[in-house]
Image: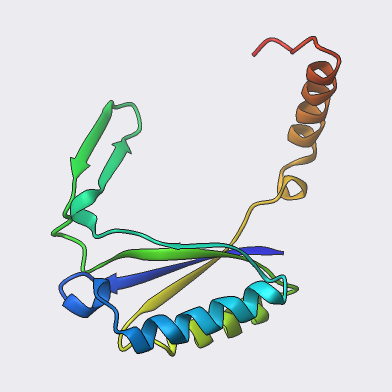
Length: 141
């Protein structure tokens, strides 16, 4: 099962985006370990929210864009990891190990939606579409 681990930091703490060499070394060892085990599929940190934006669409409404920083947010996304493990318990264990390297962090764990998790009628519709595309005749949308 694939899980997305999203770590969130208090953006007002300067060390959140200015890690010590010791932290970088410890994180490198951890990431190498989980990558070599085949568990880590992808991982990246992100810049502070002042370099980001939020796009929202309300039901029945138009789109709105809010540029960062996001003053209303106490915690902001600091990065993510995409992992492949056998259970939620294993995802929690990795998130705990990851979180233990920080002074203050929260890690949200979300199972990734797989094709098999979709309703059967949606799977059948997509399979039919894939066959038509493979034959060079895409189905109308």
